[in-house]
Image 1 (cartoon, one colour):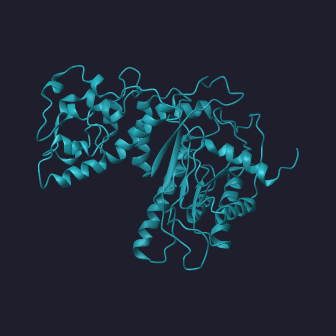
Image 2 (tube, rainbow, N blue to C red):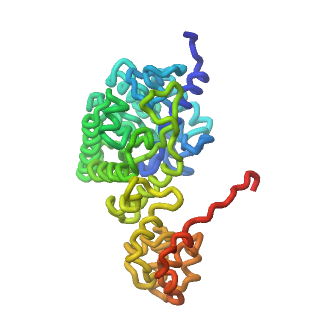
Image 3 (spheres, rainbow, N blue to C red):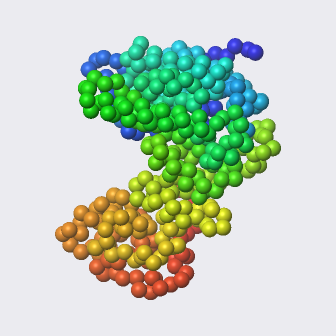
Length: 414
């Protein structure tokens, strides 16, 4: 095989990393190099983000250490039996690339994952060495996110958390049965065991920080995970339930959802078509309802179709829930508690907080609410204001057509 130069390796391994969606950079400790020491920062203008043509975030220097792998997961384009061009960076090459890109103001940090070569421990050692060298040899203070390998030695995963701002371990698929069928070499219990170890290490670090000022840090931005949507038969109700369990058991910062994308020379057990990207979007919206709008997992799941278990694609989950449980509406914006205002379709967290702050001084009218949201049409059937009571709308059985967003033709050169 011909020797590849750094540019060719970068083209292959950056493209291979685009399928990993969990590249957000929020929540980490604040660091900078304004004192003249070290290099990099997690403050200022923040982390740079770029977007691929298909809409996926490819922020930071987002690459794989290698796209070679000893595993043969059916859904993965880098699986052992896949006919793709292979490449591999050394740990030092990744360090040099990160520093060179940072000095050119291309990036503010590193997102590093890898296929598994030789063994899980060997691969994890290489990933940790990249982070160690950046932190200790070059005093790099920018953001580092490392994808860890569940089968690796727990001490290696601990070292990854010592040097990285965030670590993540992919659960891959929403159900144990789906993982067993599509990735037989991976084990759900080992994945969850590794996530539990990271959670314990994060808790220990927080406890030590309360007692000792010089306590070493551990993944200050927490841990996250990713699930592939549409590769198996899991419904949206299954996925919402699984995400809720992960949040509860491991206190994850984020669960990311990645719509399955058909790959060349695909296995016969995979679907022939990708799920609509809108399904991925609806799952993110349902995730937001649990994290910021105080919805219980069973309430979010109740917005899904009873027969199919799928969330509707034509409306968001919050509106779907409101239409399904109309007995909770309309809500009086001048009297209702915060938790009920958060359930009004079209009202976000900031809008609700402004409503609560403003109504201390005067009664709110419909035009006041209109200034806080994009469209008042969606809100009319669900709220009561000083000058508005939806008597006719509340009794209508066919209110859905009035609040569903209207389809419109987009313009290419608007």
